[in-house]
Amino acid sequence: MALQLLQKLQNKHFLSLAGNGIMSVLGMLNMIILYRALPVASIGMWVFFLSILLLVDTFRSGFLTTAFIKFYAGASPERAREVVGSAWFIGGAITAILVLINIPAYFFISYLENPSVVLFVEWFGIIYVASLPYFIASCVVQAEQRFDHLLYIRFSSQGIFILFVIFMALTKTATLQNIIYAYLAGAFLTSLFTIFMGWARVSSFKYRTPACISEIFHFGKYSVGTTLSSNLFGTSNTMIINFMLGPSALAVFNLGQRLMEIIEIPLRSFAATGMPELSAAYNAGNKEWVIDTMKRYTGLITVALFPVCLGAVALADVAIAIIGGSKYVDSEAANIMRIFMTFALLYPMDRFFALTLDVIHQPKINFIKVLVMLAASVGSSFIGIFLTNSIYGVALAGLIPTLIGVGVGYWGLNRFQPFNIFSILTTGYGQAVMLLKSYWYKLSAK
Image 1 (cartoon, rainbow, N blue to C red):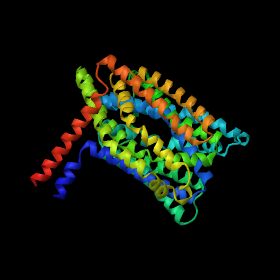
Image 2: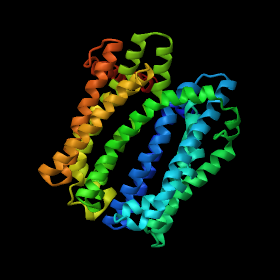
Image 3: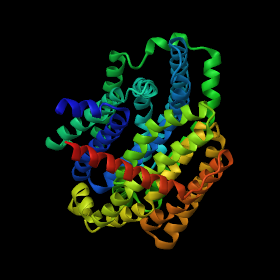
Image 4: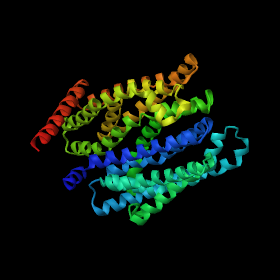
């Protein structure tokens, strides 16, 4: 029985969901420890540092991830080596350029007044170099749909980091500087692990070709803009709150927003497994199949998330107390979580509309859409703080870019193949009922 259960769970959907779930659980555990071990202001500085670090990393991940999967998946062994080698060239070039930009910044550290910015300038370059091999390895295993290997990579990077954090918490040595040492160690050791396992494919660098580099570059120039602009939503909020309301307010806002991981886990997981299906439908020239696949994923996730959002709104105070500790119980964190959860059901449409636009070779629509969303997000966040003088204004402002994203995505896909947006919900409901009946039938048959 146990063996049969394990065999059933060995599928790409479960492994992708498990990978994202483990990352989120470890990240949440790490957050619980950090929020108790560090002062509120230090937490705000760490959130700012990590947000800017991940934003800059988008230049590399946004340029390569989608393009790599598109050109690698289903390719011949010779073509696959060529794609990996070309990806190594582009990834290395982007890393080198950003590190070269970072080096002169060291000479201006004494002129910087914000400690969060100083922290970023000091550590960005070395962390970016240390994470390159395991980033390439993640692209390779995802393109091969080896989500078990992707699970190992994610568990390694987050697991090593959290082990160091737990040690520092137990030995009372948790400081912001030591936390960064632990983060660097996690990236470096995970890269060594992927090189040792052969997943990073370092030897494929010699198979790069100018033609393949050009192909990846021209596709990636749009996808990087879309990914970068998307990540700027959260980072722009981080910067606005940090400089207008202070790091303590940022710590509270991040705590409330951090619990959105319960929405992001299934979105990231099914986006990873859905893209190959959408690509297969598009490559077969079947427009209806493309839209039906998108509706099936989007609708099912939306329906499944409905009770989750209701529960999160009702139990927000309990969640904040567990994760942040007693010092955040009477803060705005719980209400921030409630605000985000009220319009989180729009996220599956926004995510899968954008993913499908990429698959049907319309990344330009995505790019323009995200730029409009970013402008709306920044503008509405400033207006929100001006009207409320609190982080509530920033949270409420998040609805505006989400509505823009869904609207433009729906318009773009309707140009490709007309469909009714409400059919997404009916399709999702039908899928959910079918799955529940199938599960109930299997239980009754035993």
